[in-house]
Every structure is written in C-alpha cells, then in structure tokens.
Length: 390
Image (cartoon, rainbow, N blue to C red; front, top):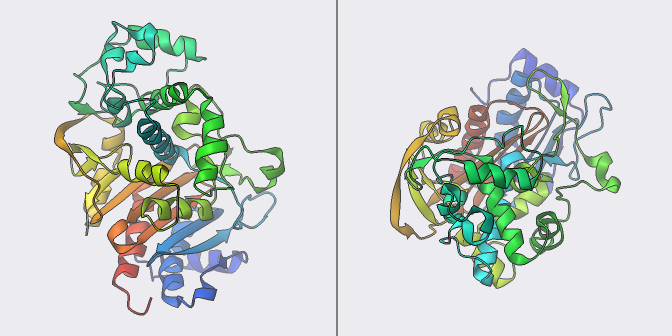
C-alpha cells in the first residue's frame, strides 16, 4: 500500500466521510494528521470499513482521530466516546491483573494450575504452570473453548481429561482457554468475580472510564455496530472464558491511556505500575518474536516484514517451537511491543515503543486482515518517529 496515493475509491470515501474528526488540531501536529490520514483513508476504502478510531502517543502526548460512522444504519459518527470490541487485546488486561495479583501475594506465575484448581490435581493440565497459561505454552490447547462446553464445571471436566500434544514450555499454541483460565484463577486468588475486578478495580485504577466487559445500558448508544468481513452486522456473543479472553469494549482514548501506562507516562499507584511493566518480561523466543506475558515484543527498530511474520496466521493457527529465556529477559525500553485483537465484527491493533514514547491504537468496526493493521500502524509510527518538528 502506498499511503499517499489516493485512489478514486478513497477520494469518494473521503468526500462521504463528513464525520472525520481530528483531536490533533489543537496540538499543531499537522504532520501527524497527514501521516494518519494517508494510511487510514486508503485502508477504509480498500475494505469498506464504516468507522475507525486511531489513538496515538507521540513524544509522550496523546492524540486521537475519528473516522466515519459507528453504524452504517444510523450514520452516527464515530466520536471520542465510541466503544469498539477489542477482542484479544483484552488478554493484556488479564495479564496485568495476574501480574498485580502476583505482586499482591495471592498467586505465583510459577505455581502449578492445580494449586488453584484442586479438581485438576493429577491431571496433565494441572501440571502446567500459570506462566504457561499466560504465554500460550501449556502444551497444545485449542484456539477456542470447545462449543460443547457451556459452563466452568464442564470446562474443568474437559481440562481433567485433556492430554497435551507437547510438554509444557516447548511449543507456543495461541489459545483462548489458557489465558482465560489464568483470568479465572487470578479472580479466584483475589476472592472476587473476574468481571467485577476488571470493571471496578483495574480499569478505574488505570483511569479507563469508558471501558467495559458488560456495556451498561446508559452507554449502549456509544457501542459501535460491528460488521463481518462480508459486511454482515455482528456483535460479540458471550461464552465460557470470553470475559477473560476477548470481552472488553473500549474507546481509542482509553486505550491510548493504557499505552501511556505501559510506557510509564502517567501517574499510577506504584504496585499497579510495577505489575504493568512486569508483563513486558520476555519468557520465550517464538520465531521472530519474544513472548512476554501475553504481549509480544521485537527489538526496535523492527522491519515491517518481521512484524508481519510475528503476527501472521501461522503464529495463530499452528504450533511454534519455543526456546525458554532463562533467566527471563527483564523489561526493555528499546522494543516494539504489540497485540492484535479480532472479533467477528471488529478489528484492533495496539503497538508501542517505550524508548521513543511512541504508540498507536487502531480500532475498526469491521473485521479485516491483521497484516493490513500491522502495515498501517508500522507506516504511521515509522513516519512519525523520523519526522522533525513534532
């Protein structure tokens, strides 16, 4: 994609998108707007995306842009308050909560799963560590919780009978059941319900006032309508471990604040800040990327092709042999850290470089390929990182 080449389709989209709002105007960063418009408008045209929100941290300062509409039916504009499903970006919040629980002394990531789920004593799943659950390395879990499972009791029976394909810590197989169970265990160790912990403790502590697992009725008008890649309306249907794995709905502004927290740019309670940074610890080398606690990291600067390989379908759908990093790699500043998120009707991508105080949030109310999200984000951040006058 050539970001500055505006096709006829893009020009039509630009004319039609009367609801393009930039909150960068007051900052005077015209180069930021040029970079974002030049990448996002062709992307929206290419995939007929109704609406997008882009948030940035540039030299430590937040900037946000809104494009298009939250619903093709109502034509209501995307605004600062528009809620998008963020899919597996939710896993980074589950990881943060687990890290906070560890610092609070209610769990250890090195403990066996069976310590917190006694019914799994003697099972293969029970032998996997909490760290295995948070790094996709327990031994070959499926991508999704099987459709036949409808509650946590059935889930535990499934885990009791489950047999690994690989020894724990030898292969990475991206899986919702693993991180979802880490969320379940974290909540149990803290003596509370997971959703309550997330909505009433962690998200408020981060200053994320417009982020939810269950969107309250007063906010439903801000909840964007999602669309499948074929253009059919779609919104998330809750299921077993969905809250822990992919259930958060949020705004670009709130997620920019989360990026800022991950770069130590906003004041936070000291233990929470330590927990956030600890999720950047590198535990396994998996192909071209380092597997942190859910987050995925690359030495910076990083080539686009490396990011595309690390965020490829192969990394999601096939097993990747890993090498344990021993001792674990301490959190670094000179890295690109990222996470994708997808639901049937929404697409998300977050990336940040602590050393450069630079980050991006890309949200859309239509599902479109991960490679295109990574490509536009890399193009925008690369252009801003080398720009003068910001």
